[in-house]
Length: 426
Image 1 (cartoon, rainbow, N blue to C red):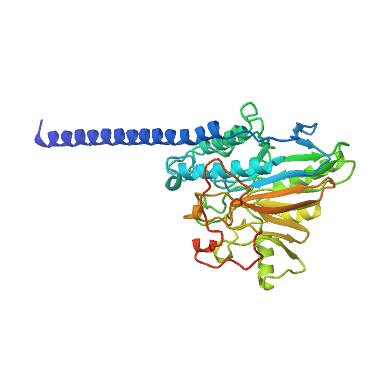
Image 2: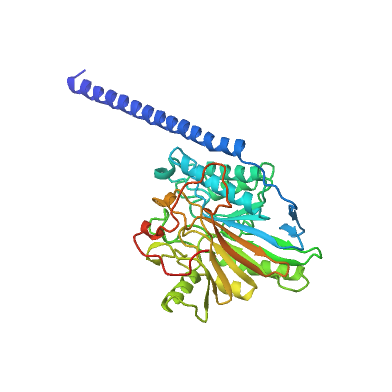
């Protein structure tokens, strides 16, 4: 054997040894991270199991599935909805404390408000490695579902862009199966919906009176995630409700009208990414010197994102016009965490829900003016009203001590710009 041959063999052996130890170290590191993440999950799961208590109702409404396969609540009284949005549970080793704050806030507000239905408009999960320490979006979904089941409150959700990122372990369909598991989570009313319609989670929940008349239909939509090749959302090219979903919606309205004695029921819509019309409405209001116009009437709230940012979808397939034509009175969404503006625009109320997020924005845990819930009261005649509730009111008493924030602190410092001078939150 020549010296050259021996040298090549030695190099190959050293490379194999290096490769072996590299793979070994990588596997070991992965194992260590998995163990740390498992321990992290245990802390908040124990919090849910040991400290969270079931909400006590005087008269708890229980939904039933009707002949149309939609969940239906029956009442002749006001129906109370709590909108939550952008919970942003990381469910990893880096987000333990912030996850606990989010769970703490959600439990406190639900316990106090006692809503008939909680609707979460997207982004329950935030499995972003640099913030959460994990890619596993399943853990966030299960953690939140366990919290809601322990509270014993009926709830549903629409998906947001962060619930199933491209790099997350589990797809939308896989996460949808978790929420649809009625044996484990009987209080979750989520439905995947028609598989021939874009997205997962296009479905309806109805409110009827004792005579069987629909007083309000609640439409849930998947507004998807990103578009135009922006697979990871780096360029903020957000998607929207697609054309086939608009067709599904109008078809469902027609069917509901037929079942309602020919009367088109009033309705409300819930999804994650704001429609283009939210941006149009604010720009018109802003151009008018922050005053009401013929088309825009301020209800309450602020655009708190820097540079008056509204991250609406970059396409428009006509869902707003369909709302106008089919008796949908209002649409509720999230996505932009510092925005909580509510306006009436061309006959439809457009509302940003108050967010929960302690994790996604840098420094967001230190700000509080945007954090809370949105209460929507549907009256027996189908009319409705909504208002925002800030989490830092004394009436919300969390299990763990509530963090201290300065509500007068300028939220816009996160982006370094000025909050638009809209009406102050009450």
